[in-house]
Structure formats: structure tokens, C-alpha cells
Image (cartoon, rainbow, N blue to C red; front, side, top):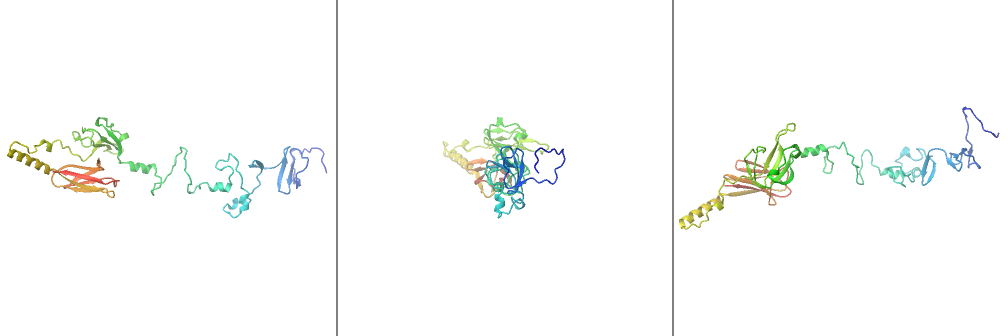
Length: 331
């Protein structure tokens, strides 16, 4: 029966209806006309110009059409089934522009294989955080592990930070901002009450001065601390102050020469070495200690120095990068 006019079902259901199945599209279609293609099993509609599959439209290589792939068709039921080339080929093609994360023109499975798994993996290129933080970093264990801020702060506590050369008058005010800074003082100076050593101690130019906390974390007490083994020798008579044995009489010359020789032989030195595989050295002496210092490459360096029982122990926190010479001067 042919219906030659429109039917108004007045909002009643059209039950058990079947959309007209055809192997090819109807000729002379009207806009809005639909039919079921029995050959490719897809329903089509006519938009006034062309027939298009009904459903979600995917743009691939400039063509549009309905997405007809099922979970089984594209192999998502078994993504690891790499042998099923047919399933994967059904989901191969250009990825439309705007799909962030996939390269235009790439294969979906190839592109997915390039992504880092949430459970971990190995990066194949640089990781740019775009000014974002990396949080939840575990404590480093191996040499190539990332270090978190907690570990970094633990290393920094008590570590001296070389901060250049400075005149004594320009030493920074005592504060938490400069704690553990180490300065090389370029001129001779006398300590004040702000020094660990107390006031009135004389030190030569080149003395290293650190700013340390002698209190606690909650109740800090900041002090200057002179890091040097140099002892003030200004009260001692220098060899140049003595005659050289050129007096006018034999007796005077002999007396002067004997005195000079005695002074020359009075001051002695003893040395030791901290090798690059060690962190300390002991130097023994007999008599009265005058000076103890350490040098690396001819330049004085600050080390912890302990004096006990005619023995000077030089100690550094870590093995040096070059041998350190430890010198003790005594009389």
C-alpha cells in the first residue's frame, strides 16, 4: 500500500517497525529520508545533498562517517593481541587535529605505545615540567636518584659555604640569613665579643671567619668563628732583630753569631699529609707549639685542629680532592 499523504501518529508509538533494507541507496531521495543498507549493515540518512551514515561521526583523512567499530572489532577486548593485524588495522589512520597527545597522522596503537605508563617506565627524552613541581619524591638511595628537599636540608646543616673575601669591617651582621657562610678576611683584625674565641684575639690577614649558631634551632645564638691554626707570634723576637755576627771584636762577633745560630736552630717544623683517600693526619712534635696550619696547592685551608699530648690532629669532613700538607711549627 502506498501512502500519498503524511501520517500524524499524535505522539503514539510506531511499534515493531523495520527501516527499509536496501542493498543500494534509494534514487531521488527526499531530505530526511532514511534507509538500512543491507550490504554494509549501516543505517543512512539523506541531508538534501548526500547520504551519510547515522551515528557519531569520525573525521579521517578528510572523510566523515559513522563509527562502526565495536570493542571486538578494534581488539580492545585483548589489546595485547598483536597477532590480530585485522583488528588493529581497523583502528589505524590519521588522528584528527585537536586530539592532544597524539601525533597527526599517527597510528593509535603506535601513539599509545609511546606514552609513559602510570605504573612507571623509562623516559626516552627530556621531561619539561613547565614550571610545575614534582612532589612525593622518595629519599634518594642510589647515585643517580633525585634528592628531595628534606635530604638536601639535612646535608646543608652545619656545612660551611665559601662566600668570598671581605675586609674585617665589612663582615655581615650576625643573622640566620648568613649562618654557615665562610669568609676570607683580607686584613689583620682583633676579635670582638661577637666571636666564639671572645674579644681581644689577634689574627693575621687571610684568616677564615665563619658565622655559626652556638645555640639551638629554637633558640639560636649566632657568633663569628675564626677558622685558622695560626697563632699570634707578634710577642716573639724575630731572627732579623738579632745581630749577624759582625761585631767589632772577635768576642762580640762570636757571641752574636752563637746567639743567632741558637735562635735559628730553636724553631723547628714537622709535617704530615692527608691523602685523597683519607680525612685526617697526625703530626707529633717536642717542645712548645708555635703554629699549626694546613695547605692545599700552596694555599692555606681551614681544617679542624685538635692538640693533645704533643700531637696535632688535622681533620677534614671529607677526603680532599688533592693532597693536603699539615705543618706544625714548634720550638
